[in-house]
Length: 329
Ligand SMILES: C[S@@+](CC[C@H](N)C(=O)[O-])C[C@H]1O[C@@H](n2cnc3c(N)ncnc32)[C@H](O)[C@@H]1O
Image (cartoon, rainbow, N blue to C red; front, side, top):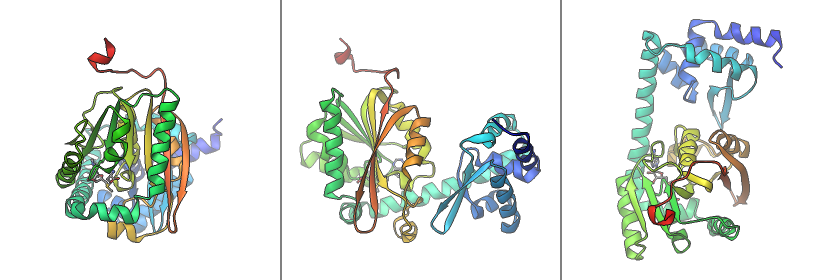
């Protein structure tokens, strides 16, 4: 139950022009102070003061990532309730809101361009880098065990979707266990390498195509297992990617996410273009729940420097499903 004092504090915090703009800008993004300064055209001390007030009033959360801090809308409590009531009232036609959104669009486009350029550049070296950073034998064994567990319990693995497939290693890993595999990636160079890999091994039931994690162009309810293997930490909006992946799952289908646990190796930002320094279990579980997925199972796999985690969440039984015509007849 919200106390009157809490509500008043949140209303007072929101009731100021710049702070209202901040809430509008952060409604669908998570930004650092300096990114917000660029959007608002205001100085860092001013913006920081507004952010502090909004956090204290429970309207925003501060997500500390090493030496960076990202600000995002509160996910629960009075602040969340107030945001749900307030944000739909902000007119997108308002000139100021439109200007802020357009600057935010520029920042996002710059980030996406930098990330895309990075992957085109490193594509040829990715398999080598992958061995050093993520392709732990142990991680792959845990992924295979998870898939086998799903099948042993009667789960289908006819259609597998590998989101951000890169050079297609995950398709290769699961190829002998699935009916069809589809890999999707933004980088044409990565896709060329994935095609060569699949062709070289005669994996004709697996294919790759160009696409974006946020808009997969895959039918809703048409996939048994979707995989996001070391993709989320590069993305602007991991929650949106999880929601889009969840949309593709059939009832009982599984989303398998592999990524780093929270860490403090700042250099991965500059050296490897990571945006996020890993993810906490609660964060992934709450994004999965928001996407309609249930029962997130967690496996932590430690190596000397980082924890890699496998999270597996399940699509609920009442989700709508699409099956291929031959399977339906
Ligand atoms: C670190 S690689 C991982 C590749 C693969 N999952 C693996 O484990 O080898 C991340 C991949 O995500 C892709 N990617 C990044 N942002 C993307 C987006 N918005 N849509 C589709 N793919 C994206 C990159 O092009 C890159 O191939």
